Image (cartoon, rainbow, N blue to C red; front, side, top):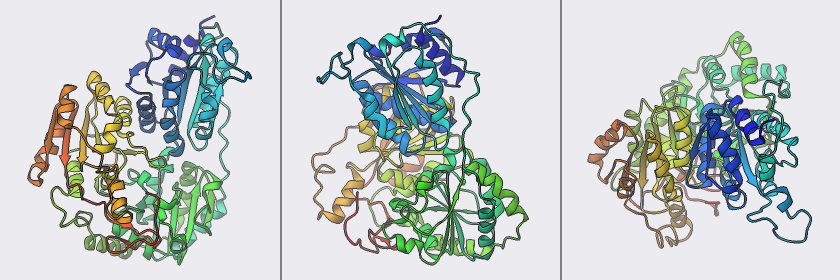
Length: 574
């Protein structure tokens, strides 16, 4: 019989896993040796376990195959937790495998803190942010839990699973896993056809309907089906931050992003709408603002989601359609085709008029230096070959979501529910391995970029075609803007006590071509250079430290009332 770690290596390959992201440690050496000896899966050695977790997430979001990251016991396993939580909140399928001390070194029920070196109870730590977290208790149990981990990660609303494998079990002899065994059926909600018919009738009556698309569409791998349905309905489409890449920029139905930092015209369109069809968006405070009564008033809301708890959660009175989004789109299509749906040209033109009145590039008119919204359009104009844009977390993330011009086959990856700085660079690495050869464009801030800057070595070692654009405002800009509003410009830890290095010099130390600019005149040529470089490259774009991200919903007010023209009522969470 083969060694258990050999069985793991073969099973991962049979599941379509092409890369395993890791940082080496003693308790995963059996696993790494077996994967290397098998030669079917690429081992990508990162420089921090958090980076490994984000890279696994980036690859999974590009492919739909569960991402895999490994870490040793103790600090290694704990360092995975941020990436695990990111996968959980943004519905990304992933399997995290942690090494653990030998079973005879575990403290068990002894009244001590630790017995084996680096022994840490990772299962209970990960349980709240995973679909399941298990420790393998016997060699015979390992094949069963491997099967269950991948099945669970993919099924229903996707998410992460953690499997903790003691060292002695990794080295034990076990039978091969039969990867061809039929998986347990994925139980999906039964679609209520009468509710679909009711929805289509409501759309026939509505004068100003909108569709809100969210990250659930990509999580359900339903983009193609939903796009076909949207074209059939002919209804204008707004998106959440996680739904930026559902409708291409060129579509006549695309409106823009709504929410806290949404395009002003898109939020105004929500205010004028009389019906909203929500597809895979959670309707949290970042989408609706704090005034849910204003969001609900004067309109019907139909909400499609695979989890009943997400419907009528904050926003009440929604017509619930519990369904997998791919199933919903397939079931709604024939009903929509058979219906006599009204022409929406006048409503679409009304929205376009709002966009002409409030263009994104005019939100920061008067701010000195490079306009970040203009910069995003310039970046888009030269990034047609890119497979994806990856945005870290901060003001730059919102400027990117407001203004990037995505093509139909381009993806937009960012950390939504968790909002973790440091997501961008390792997620771009994972995305790059998913689509080898095509450039990946990373938009990062100077603050967030420093949290996982060590992964530049991973980029350099593998010569990944990642194009790094740092929007450098020499501060933690989003929180600095928060302090400007609520703390009388006392900038502790965002400006005071904060600094950043010469990023071009740092990149050069990794043998990555790099440049820095700070004037509008240089921006167009510089982004063209960034995308023209054959391998990785970095462009440090210095913008005004006082540039604020506008528009922004004035907290406590309806989402149509946005800063800087409206003032907040009370204090929000940053």
